Length: 394
View 1: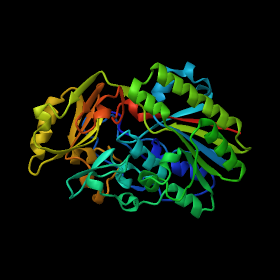
View 2 (view 1 turned 90 degrees about the vertical axis):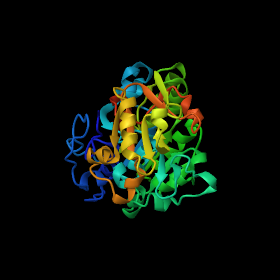
View 3 (view 1 turned 30 degrees about the vertical axis):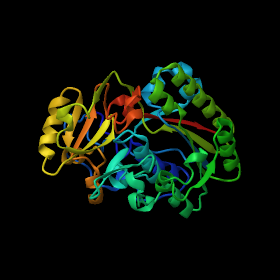
View 4 (view 1 turned 135 degrees about the vertical axis):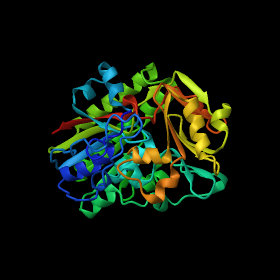
């Protein structure tokens, strides 16, 4: 088990380090570094979350963060020949955070807080007291219900902090994501610049930096999509990796003097070799009120009074294939960070099931597309947790 390196070696530590590199000093703003340390090692934990030294980046006049969805560090190393520019950059490795999934990592990067502090604790989470699951990526609830992004994720963002410090902060991403609930939850305060084609995104980044924007983020998501549908390492995935490599090269070539380009990712990926349909296995369905999370990081919400039985049944059924713990064990083991806010505790499943083999725990009736995937992420294996932090400077 690779418990994320909160406090110095995780994605939650990167936003504060970028602001510090730009000359903004905010003592005590990072939940990763200011929260009390965890003391319980937890089931199978290889290390406690507070052992990594603080993340320090060299000063720069401007920084560009290139966020590549699904670019795991181990995946990149396995196919270095397909990404010669990325492989030539100065490299270090961070851990994504738990779960290793897009909504959680985007919020860690957007706030500089651990999952336990910002509350985006998984892809689909129970809304306490409602009996409903909330999809944090699609920002959707059943029955046409809505969720206020400011209430679901109330923490100030790194972009709001940058603006307060007099730094123009720009985000370049697909037009379809502008103004969505997730964007409003994790990117409040940023100036969103919509661009779809790769060339347009590169051009918008260079224009923003030449115009004086000192804090620019650009996102690319097609590598992750290819991994889900055809598997990481597939022909389509390698084609997308080459696109990412070329995009990074073009971003670097247009940097203004005194700038730094950083390339990172929100998570890695594994290709599933085994799937369990949690809807058809009686031992996994009995006593379960809601099945949340995703295939590699399940939040299991038990019916009233059934928590202990559900925990035992999931442990017995998945023995040797997944880490299965109670909510309390997951929190005390520091999976979500050194601490979890009391207000977020009921968002976590009564049982948390995290495969450590190449297993996907699917629910085809509820999530038919996910059940068809080849590539998955969310767990605490090195392939999913390790993300690169690549650097080039002018």
